[in-house]
Length: 140
Image 1 (spheres, rainbow, N blue to C red):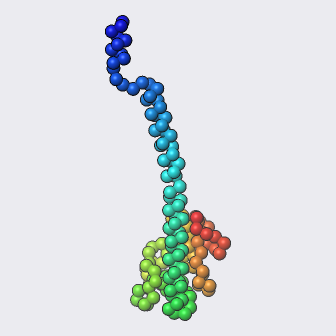
Image 2 (cartoon, one colour):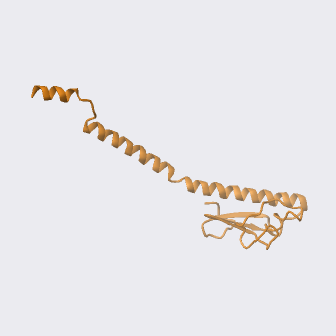
Image 3 (cartoon, rainbow, N blue to C red):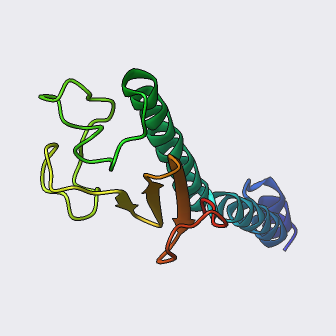
């Protein structure tokens, strides 16, 4: 019996309590990571929306500085390379537009937000989700 106790004391390894403590610590760390990563896509959508609004506003103001009036629409007024007024790169997110030369579009739809351009005032508005952009709406 004395030999069995001595041999048990000399064997190296982790006790059940030590293993349980390590598992609890790993669980807490995993919970913190999941909680911290949860809102990354929302912040990305908001940043993309603000960047798109800023880009379109800059293009509208550049057009105004060059021509002296606000463009009638975003596409093709700001995207037509042949017209000499290409201030924006065209992409398929301009609603109803099939190319940089038209048909005309004043709305850009992206994942999670919409952007609208008001030709009479040169204002650019954004709204999250399926909401129609107005002067009172903002990026999500």
